Amino acid sequence: MKVGKLEKTWNKNVIALGLSQGFIEPLEATALHLVLETMIGFFTHFKQGDFSQKDIEHFNQSISARYEGIRDYIVCHYKVNTRNDTEYWHDVKSNIPISDNLCAVLDTWDAGKDITPVLQARGMDKYYPAVSWYCLLAGYGRFKNKPGTVDYDQKISEQISEQRKQVRRFLQATKGRFLSHQDALKALS
Ligand SMILES: Cc1cc2nc3c(=O)[nH]c(=O)nc-3n(C[C@H](O)[C@H](O)[C@H](O)COP(=O)(O)OP(=O)(O)OC[C@H]3O[C@@H](n4cnc5c(N)ncnc54)[C@H](O)[C@@H]3O)c2cc1C
Image (tube, rainbow, N blue to C red):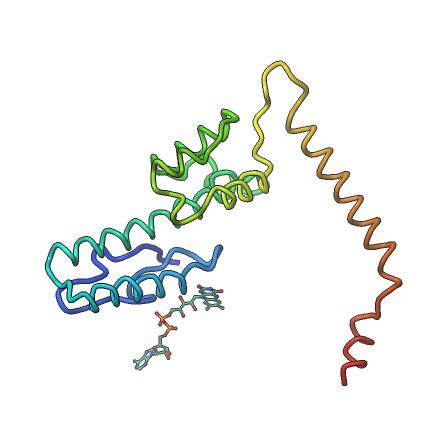
């Protein structure tokens, strides 16, 4: 995919919207969100009659910042991936360029500190709040070893596999209480 965005979403009397405006990628399904935010941003200016060059630049900057906020979150998926089965995944992990903002979040997380103040100070929480970053980073199992303690990664992976076993036991124990998918559909007709 050719990804990227226009430098100016609003240029003179033209607004670019949707794919004509830019595209990041489908992983977090953000395209329609960007369409809506662009429309809402434009309508706000339109209603207020704000059409000066300064207003247009302000609008373009806010759209660019949103794209960049989303880009950082998407790029993080690739940066913290743990796959090493192909050259592709190895390359994206090692060579993908990351912004100062994303670098600051990862450094803070890896140091075991609270990322919320970093997200707030950099305005990144407007696009993805701390809880989204927790889901992403913890979901990828990015837990650095803590010096002087047991192998932290190992401990987490043991906990996850125990949780999986619990889910499997629960599903096993409850499946007999429900209709099969096919019988449930028949019961509806
Ligand atoms: C399978 C799939 C799943 C997706 N899921 C999501 C999702 O979950 N969330 C999300 O945010 N985004 C999702 N997207 C992305 C999102 O659908 C697109 O980014 C969005 O539809 C782009 O809108 P658009 O108006 O710019 O372009 P389009 O929706 O492509 O509209 C362009 C229109 O122009 C028409 N057209 C083209 N050429 C001409 C012509 N010469 N003359 C007249 N008409 C023409 C086309 O027929 C089309 O109707 C998904 C995309 C795909 C393909």
